[in-house]
Image (cartoon, rainbow, N blue to C red; front, side, top):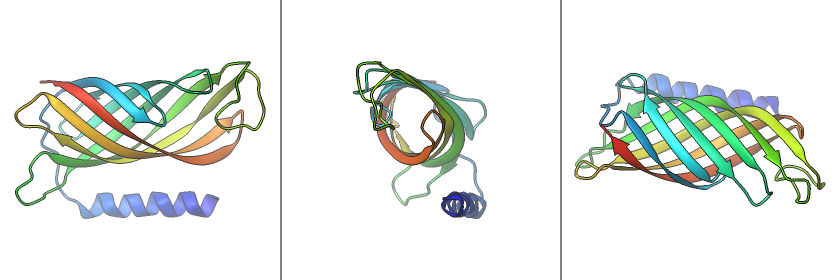
Length: 164
């Protein structure tokens, strides 16, 4: 499992080094909805032209809630005739709970549980030039540390209202 994590980290690092530009920030803050895992409410705020923080408040079928915080580095994806695309990668952490009468998303048992872990993110974002909307699609590999140790690959689609 360590080999998979190290290989993933090296692959993402090589991609990041090969792109030598900074994203052209078209908004400062955005809020919206996220479908997938985790699903819920999402907000993103740019700290610089190419770095942002994202927060996800999630709720799930397991009867609990979760909070994920991510630090992201955005880079332009220079597609001929299609401005507005960025790709991003980053790291973060999550904490979540599950309800006592439902099965947790990571365990094979029922009961109230608290989860804590580290997250990664790799994704694409499109920012519409004519409307205050962005759409993002990403993959979040997570390493759960507490209560159920393991690695999962989550994915989601976010639609956000952007504020300049």
